[in-house]
Image (cartoon, rainbow over all chains, first blue to last red; front, side, top):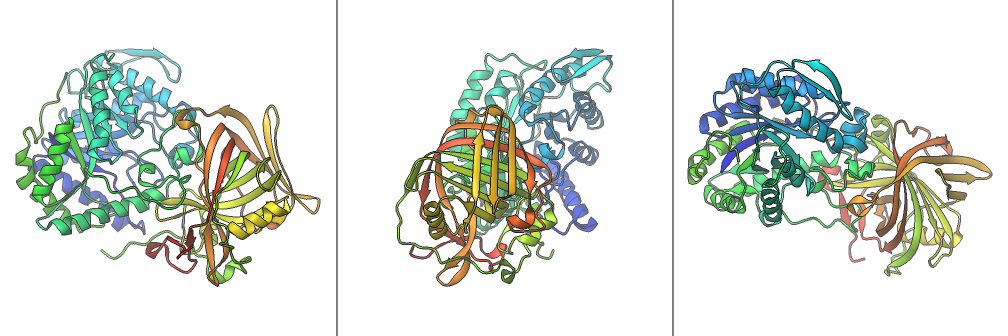
Length: 368
Length: 255
């Protein structure tokens, strides 16, 4: 079991220079500490126009800042959006390789396609085609890294023969991942030999069938990259404190903050029914179904990591037994917790919880 | 750091005008409507306009969104009817809702039902919701003047994920326990057919619709669904005076 951090760079109003810089600098400080404590990874989302929820429009730049402040921690795109209106696949190949160079081979390349009208509508992207464009991007980007010169005539992307530069440090290339919000996308990851980052916060028991299906399916995959990245990571919340009740209270305050921010966005499934968005995205998983009568709320997920060290050890053991390779923690929301408390929580987690799990620190990429 | 600011409506309760008649909580049964055609279209509008029209108990959606909605019911307790609404997307807590700006109905019995049970004001109007081979047209005509025409085109079938549309529950200004309140419409939907396409408004007479300032800008999508609708009793209210961060929707006591 490995542990990582997951950054949305959520920012409270008003969006002053001081506030925005504080969010960015605090996240960097958390990562530097995580690197010292033996956390394995730091992931940064790509989002656009998501007021308060995420001001992380340029994850490559944030990760580059982290690269120069840290020594061991791996740096994950969580994710790079594979939508032509936002990025060319050439630019993703270049940026990831560039970061791999500046970090001396610490890049994890997560892919995805966005699930909000805020973003896809804002870029006037073709919503109906995002799954297909994501698929084509996943197939061409590794080739841009590994082939000296690359050309492509595809459905959504063409390029004449060029040498895409720089080439990554990691041989043959950084591990490939897919962000999974809708159930079933983990199978898309498995079919392509890619790691799955399950972003929908959930109960351990509900995720187990998806994990098992992923492991089974990836045995017969046709990898889009040069190797199979048979890894399952799950996003989660974490607040660790000696006082279990206090930790739980603060933890659910973080969830409430996140829910408030996420609730204001406009999910694709809410605004633009589409056959390639048959399930609600991450943000939508936090809301009651608009079509469901009343205001019934789902009970809190059973696998959240709020509590004292003993409680977290028990909870993480359940995730480990379920087959999860890595838990990626969100430790802050809209700067709700004082930075000192976030750092103290991380230190306590590292000293009291991490030693109970083998391979907790930064390690070589597992390759099936 | 100091408590962060929240984004919520700025309209004071006095600006909402007089609510309609008090809700009638007498009949708590579920009313079934079979094979209702629902032509539902979403558009963006300027955020400043949305914030100025929502009470402080509601957050806007980001981006600001408004909806035109046409129901054509053929069977049910009222016989054939058309109901049309224009609404502003909003949130209480984390649940999407729509604040009704105006509503119209062409069947007096249906109008009375929707007015008394849910607080729709249901102005009398001639309403059309017509599907042809390549478009759907929704139209509201008041005193021989078309005040809203929404046209949907380029429709494709939506089959995955159960083939459904997420309808945010409308909120109507009404009177509950003698106090002006927003009452939440309650319904369940069993979808039989869903199409999605583009939508635009060739005619949008904001003044006649009920608010001069509301003008749709960027179209998002239009949907046409055929579904059985299960009309449920009202259960939730939103107090215009309770700040969003302190409240949201609350259950109507004892009803």
